[in-house]
Length: 426
Ligand SMILES: [Ca+2]
View (cartoon, rainbow, N blue to C red):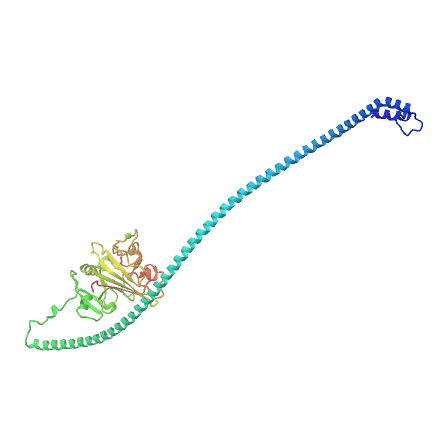
């Protein structure tokens, strides 16, 4: 400050206000006092002004500082607000997701409760069913026991009845023998009487009973298997045939037999129609005879097959019929059963008969010429029992041999065969 520095330099010269000055007189003092008053005031004013300015400067600097501080504070406040706002947003988001999770939790809890309820219901039902089943099982067990007791009682009764039956049949055979003896004695008596007294009741040799098939003979009491003469209605000549009176109650007329290969089955249509061979050995009874027999009543057919390893099987047909020659001896066949395969190995229903000179098969070829013999060839079918007879160890891979597909396959030639018929009513 230039003003205050000037005042301080002049003061050692004048020294007007120093009361302790030993050499100052009172006039000087008053003079000094009167003269110094305005200066003092001026000095005071200047000092005050200086102080005010200083104060003002300090104040303004303070104001500046406070303004700066308040700016900074505002910035900080803004930052804090911003952060607070962000935190609030996050909090809101969090609370939203929490709410969602809570809802989901609630839903899941509800579902769990529902499932538990269902489970409980199911458990109850299962328990009920188990108890019911146990009760039923117990009932069934008791019924089974009852039935077993009944069965054992009935089987006992059956055994007793069988014993009685056996005794009765023994009695019957005894009676039959006695009857035969009586008949013989009566015949003997008649024979001796004929010599003396001719009787109208006597049977002449030409009028002895005639039979159309072996079943009729069986019914008439003939029970011995063998060769018999048959008089088939509408057939011009009598036929000799072998009757099987033992197999499955007997009464069978044999219409085909292969046993040793002694007879050729390579024959014409006419030969197969009329029959060939000898009833004592291998033979074919004849299509016409079989047609006539099986057309007068329902017949059954039994086919017996024998392989080279000792195996024997049979095929049974509940219904068997041959059409006429005009129908080419068409085959009618139903109700297969037996051991010669799961299904019928004979030709299909309606198949016609073919020979080397009569091609009635369902093949563009001629099966009878290819496979030999006469048969109900289809195209050419699963069997041919009239094929070529091959001896043992030579019978494998023979397509023209004696074949039955469902027994030994398509190319195995069999050792023996029999075909026989009997009325279905037998
Ligand atoms: Ca053909």
